[in-house]
Image (cartoon, rainbow, N blue to C red):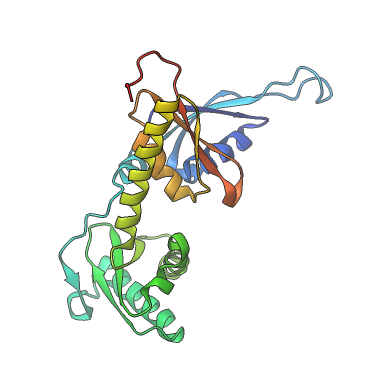
Length: 243
């Protein structure tokens, strides 16, 4: 991504603002402080905001731009997960943890591990997949959060765990990408801002990345918490495509 400027009363607040906007942690950002800001006389007169310039670190940038799952064909089971291999140990732990959670919730499903170099992808198949997915994938996200916390209790050799059910996540990303392109086209046609949302940080990233190379548009996140939305702005230009 191109470096982006943020400002707030303090550098810490500006960094927090950048993290919320991009849906990442401060560890994922390259941060350059332009000005530290100051409160002014008695904190009332002559104050000036802190300004920072941020961009995603290279590894994080590559992860963000690789949006759609490239599903490997290599399926793993307990016999093919070598105990001496860190990936195998964590993959088996993740699989067993997810199966235990689902069994206790009385779901009759099977869990497969799909091998990837860095990510442990757990694919759920069985009955009641709609309940497992939840509205906008919220149940899958909750399961994924819990399993990641259990499997990666220690910082050494962390492996990201992604939980999917019948290809829902890939379909969701495709649907969201198509919606972003459609809404972007609308913004250019009517030459007015178009609002999308509310969305979670992951979905907002997809929209931002989908439209980032469109020279006639710019996207910004707006709002707080769970009601944070994306606004697509047409840039002031005479070079708009004819509808």
